[in-house]
Image (cartoon, rainbow, N blue to C red):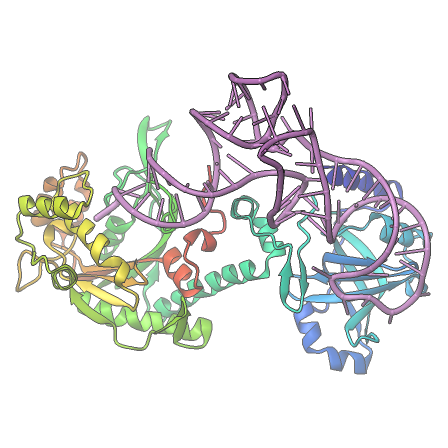
Length: 488
RNA sequence: GACUUGGUAGCUCAGUAGGUAGAGCAUUACACUUUUAAUGUAAGGGUCCUGGGUUCGAAUCCCAGCCAUGUCACCA
């Protein structure tokens, strides 16, 4: 325990000895948050309106018989308080308590409630003259003292490991971090509003699954004691949402927390949020347009504009998103002249030639690798990559004209896969074949059964919410938009 | 998993050609009745990530490990 922490615990004891509860349960009246107070400041001064606010102390400047205290509240705004013994009303029996409380026992980080009146100091700072002050919560663990002058931050709390492990401190001390998570919340709410306006239904499907399907990833494994069997945290909710389409919903969506037991990097967290969204009687072409509408809606409602600055470049989300076929794009960038029929041998030779590491010698892996190595990073402006071969898309419907390709697209922006969508395969016999080809140990037969009952033509999309939010808030690491990123 | 950079006070960081550590803010004490990164004076605070090795002596050099940053691989 640090010296400072010990001192604060001593202070806490002394506060209690004075008969003051440092963690009172009484609800104190609040009639302004600081943002609103600053907005109404002129009116408040004119009408001499009494103010009741609370907030966390960020700085104390003690004079001999008076003090200035800066507090910040949930509105993320700061206001200066002026404390002078002559203006303080009696609450406790002995007014000296106030002196003790203030001079000796209040610290940066404490949460207080005050009542008083607004006035302007000689230096033209709007300030509250304290009439009453109550300690609401004592801060015992000293928070980093970040100082700000002329919008320049000194002694910034910026150690990433500490920030992520103690996100509560990060949020208190770094205003811009709190803003990111406010935006995250607004974006998710806006998506919900948009989808609800089309009468699509938000649903909840199992996180604990018997068979982890809908994607190809290593699952987290757990165990049910009563059933005496393994259960898996979902890697995807895709197969469940399709069951619901079979069940007759017009459209369903879920903000799905998925779990994948794989490594962590700036685009991957073991648990992450995907918006999965399925609409019956529509196809992937419809989804391209609808998805762009959604993106435009998010930008308009969240940022009040459709041009978003990312890495000093501007993306206009109203511009029609380009469509490029996967192999056309690869060939354009690499001149390799490959397609869905290119043999495994030839693909392996290409990898050898370009020194691309391949662990698993499968066509789908190699093509993905080629795309990642030569194409992905060059994409900045939004692009729909389309026409993936069947062997890369076991759940997607065949293209009518080119039977080795699927009706699928992925959206790439700034070198990152943001979304993946396709017209859903609804032929149960073919689906079973493809599952078998995948060498899956466990095939979700119940899902096949649901397809046998008949799923209407359906389009589905998965949108990486963490990645999308990182993109829109101009962060290049999803840890910055996940409140508690996984750490060892 | 590979490489990379780093881990020193509550926070941000400096430092030593190897002689057990410094600054600013924060903390404590005193002064100051309008300051605002308050100021002035004084003081306290450290397993220099952990464990080995080299050395008379290691926070510094070497080895191993742990944790993290970044890049790459893996994650259709």
